[in-house]
Length: 444
Image 1 (tube, rainbow, N blue to C red):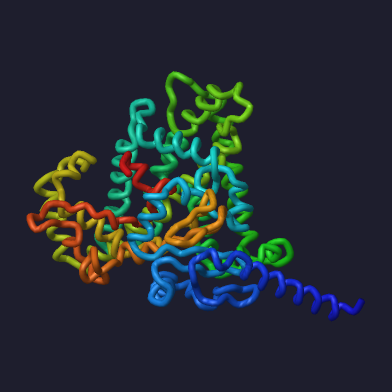
Image 2 (cartoon, rainbow, N blue to C red):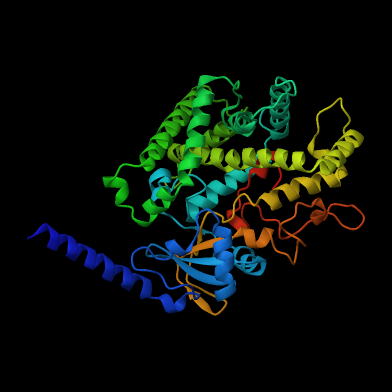
């Protein structure tokens, strides 16, 4: 048969399949823009400003609408009420994780970020409990954070107040806290192994945020037959997991069940406790996956927040002066800050919250999925449907935060200057799937 005819038949089949997939069951989902065959609504959504794209769509279709990434429908939650009703009020039904082809290749449904069902529940419960109650040996997470903060300050002092780009060292600090929690010890900032890990994490973050990865998620066959940055991503992930496995073997050889040193030790002890359970989720493969997940969960977001925080403090010297005044009054100049100081520093606490609200670092959380067919706001959302949350619509709500585009710590202060909590503060996600970097501080 003529190759051109074969190609034409294949394209026709793909087109018909796409049209069928987009129309079948569509009436059960919330309304949304009409998707194009095969590519869906990709051309109607700006990768550089997805929050604005969703905001424009919400003005037409309301707080609940459907967009298509390729042939895959994704229900978008826009605004605090919709997000709360889904992820908090119906948290169990919306607690699934939508699996995209790229994440499927890298995670293999292991670990804590992309797993589902019983595995996710057990690994998540264990991880949060271990991290929150981190009293391993004689050092808590707070001790490790304080140690790393001291090292970070010393690195900044070496600049002698001259202009510098702090991006690298601001990335090293949170990564080292996780290394200390997971591997027991921190690394020197010039350690070759540490530098290699940092390089891989940074490369992966850039690759995952690129349009090419979205193309691969929509057309997974491309990953097998075309060159691209996805191959570098897969290689980096494989090398990182290989290194983690080496560290696990070292821990196994020196494990003392009565004196766990770090997260890996605690997981290995749990593995021993469940060695007779054939259905246990506590396996070496899951340990590797969980440790690999902890790094992106706590490194990239924290380092970027620190970087933007410094920029905002430079841009708003009046805010910086008030923070310094409060630090001098509560902590002084001769000791390190601790978590107990937080309740006595309402203005500084408000500034930290406002930085995260203002920069809107994660405009949309990692997609959820519904775990069962669910009737939600008069729509029937089928089991497995991907759910995307517009966190921008929550953090920049003008109802909760007057002048949301303005950096103002007063958004988190009452009329008496006391810190004011806000249910709209969702910098990373909400509900059962929220594993924010704050767990490394023993607080969520």
